[in-house]
Amino acid sequence: MAERKYNLKKENGTTLPGKIKEFIDFLEIIASEDLKAGRKKTDQNDPMKRILKSSVDLRKVLKDLEINNDKTENSSLEPTDILDSLLNHIPAGIAILEGPDLRYVSINQMLADLNGLTVKDHIGRPLKEVLPDAAKNLLPIMRKIMKSGEAVLAREFSIKLPKAPDKEVYLKDYLFPILDEKGRAKGIGAIVFDITHTKEVEISYEKLADILEHAGEMILITDRAGTIEYVNPAFENVTELQSNEVLGKNPRVLKSGKHAKKFYKEMWDTITRGKVWKGIITNKKKSGELYEEEMIITPLKDMDGKITRFVSSGRDITERIHIQNKLQDSEERLRKLAVHLQNIREEERTSLAREIHDELGQLLTAMKMDIQSLMKSIPSDQKALLEKTNSIDDMISLSLSTVRKISSDLRPAILDHLGLMPAITWQTEEFKKRTNINCKLVLPKKEISVDNERSTAVYRLLQEALTNITRHSNASKVKVRVAQKDNMVILEVSDNGRGITREQKSNESTYGLIGMRERVSQWHGSIEINGKKGKGTSLIAKIPLKLLMESK
Ligand SMILES: Nc1ncnc2c1ncn2[C@@H]1O[C@H](COP(=O)(O)OP(=O)(O)OP(=O)(O)O)[C@@H](O)[C@H]1O
Ligand SMILES: [Mg+2]
Image 1: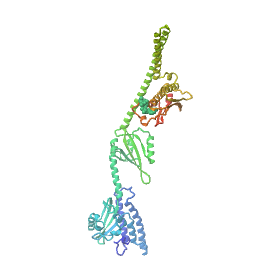
Image 2: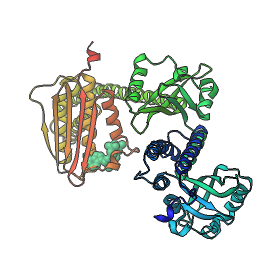
Image 3: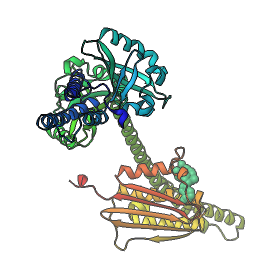
Image 4: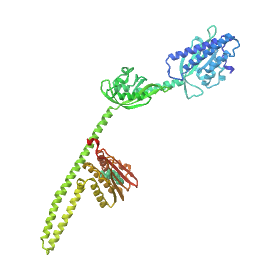
């Protein structure tokens, strides 16, 4: 450790505490000047701050020492030890160079480490030899200082040090002459700070600022109280307010009057609790025009978790909302049209079914009666004539049943005359007959009273489901269940066929399932279709029987 002694001390040693004091004074001056120069005050790693603190503490030690020195010669603390300790605990690199070739006479551990060498590597050797690269730059400056006797303070520069040649290190140094009694420079004192961290923070601040300036999003930054500190050009563009018109003001300048007090209170409560607020807000431009902003407000906190600022970023979604509304409107119109068409189709089917059944049916029945009375008046020996009229009678019977079938396929009279449950029973029976598929029907014990229109909906749902089973499922068993629960009529149809796939379910080119969904949504109901490969398909449709609104 001996080599780290303060080699420039005066021979008698008595002035040493005074020297230390001068040294501390010097540190304090540069530290406070540096702070005044506007270094980021929030940076906890600021070496200057640490120096200020430690130099104040050291001053206390020094005071004790001076008192001790005054009072007793037998102080156990050697001034050189004090200086030694001071040099090695100050968070700065310190070196003293002496003589025309600027040899290191003293260097503290920190600077030796920074140079990537030991203290020993420096002592007694000229700068040019120890740090050949850095010397190219440093020597001319140091020579100038030696000559002029004037210090060069707060020089900032970046350098690649031998220990990590790939990494750029930012340093700040204070170079000052050490004068003899006659005022001539005998050597140079150097204090070096590694400001890489601070510099990197500064650079990332600059980058951040650049990003904010060019961001497409509107950015607004306020202090803890909500006073605007920054807005970016995107904000200026949308709001038509220039930054100088809003800085120092409250974001209230954007208030549209479209939200209740509660809305703003909730927002403020959220962010002051340290939480992020997200939402869509209607704001006002300078011209008075309103715009919709999708906004996120994030509270920024310091190291103690205290909120320091609020950053709001947002985008103008007025156009998007406009398009969305238009889309919704047109979807709504299309849906209404679909419902309307379905209703018309149902009405037409009903009247067509009735017409065919009544008109054609009656006509055929009359024909049948006529032919039968004709048959009676034909003599029994007129075999050929009798055969002909018999055949006509058979054809009329066939036509009658065809008419009945066509008419009930169009719309079963049973639905209108007897209601949903009998119609479903009839429908499943027909299905069984037609397909030979085993079909189990479960009806509620108590009759559900379903109005005509909803009955039609349920009936058509079952019809489409059964048609799909016939066409696509390859099933051998089908179960149909109708039930009532929570004021809803529930239709369940399941089969044990191949199972509908996810893609088939969302197929946009077929209309069976789409029609089912439309029918259900018309009554504010729901439909769920599930398929399991090889296990079958199930469909559950729920239709509210009467909405509260309707019963009013
Ligand atoms: N029970 C089922 N089992 C297996 N696949 C089914 C079943 N029901 C429907 N699918 C599949 O879902 C697809 C869509 O049914 P959807 O009823 O919408 O159309 P579609 O019956 O093919 O034609 P349409 O528009 O005439 O009804 C069908 O093409 C079929 O592949
Ligand atoms: Mg279908």
